Image (tube, rainbow, N blue to C red; front, side):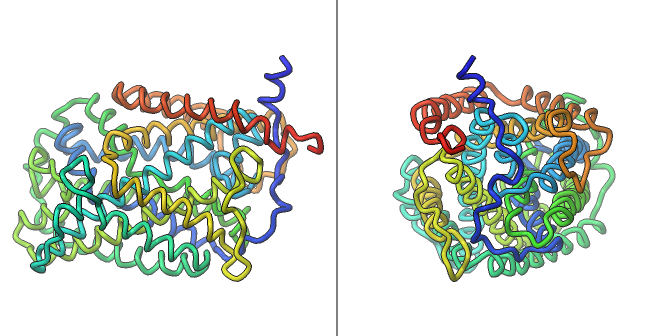
Length: 462
């Protein structure tokens, strides 16, 4: 019983508020742009075609609506906790306050994997798009330097290069990084607008027949598959300590970016399946392939450049979120406090940025991570469920806690969010569950071997 009590001890709200150093410079517009940059990436430029071809057909539009509904329930929970709890740990901090240290550790450990592996996975996709653009210019990167050792190469230098480039950007400072991100997001949205403009005039309703070739099950499976496309809005919650007015701006950033991206996803998916038959979209670059199909070669190349911009901002958000979760967990003593000093001039954790970036770059450069990447979806769904549960628990245990933003129809919406997350998790393949439980088992060993004995919460002075 004593062990259970210590595992589920709660951290009081704003327990990290005494930590100074991170620079409050982000506004609501910065957060919306960051959210769009994080969400609109691999999903719209890579996964849409594969999901349509293999999972849902033209009904992939409904898969996006279903996935966005699940995200919406979780986003409302994130918005409430972001405005009331704060902290740079996102879902980890919320679970710590709402449920206790042990569950928070599991979610934090899960987030480190989700953000880190997501960034590394997208980096490989980024490298693939870069190579295709270089090839159109007559430049070919040797396979030895563009593929990992398990796929016939020595090292994937393009994938490593983007991680290290973003490490340099993030180490400069949060405000400067946000400006860089904003420029890239504008480029990405302009490219998407080009596609929408062309595809609207090439749309053929006949290609939507049959609309649901895989039935309702296909829509659900498609939602589970493309859920990866929505990862990123939760990374906004890790900016709390760097937002000028977090109580107001965080809910705006989370919810507005999710709405905008859902609209973009549904429009692009609908047009994509309306200019090419869905079985033909089983490619890693469906948007540019579709434009080639209707005879727009130059526009196809422009979209490829936009895809690189989209993937860059997605990597940026995942990378940023990973550093902030690590920072929050190290402050609580749950992981070693290596490399967590805040640089006095840039007001960013430079050493931590390069430490985690080096690990991501090595993974992207030397490992075949397609199997590891399968657990990103299940990890995100588990974190979303944890945040929704935290809202319900805190409404009962801390009813008087200030809540500038409240999840409507609570506890119905948070509980619905948990149920939908579990439902989508159930649609994922067995290998995904095995990988997820393996990672969590490693986390349990680390927690009981190190974290409990070094936790600030368990220290005599706490």
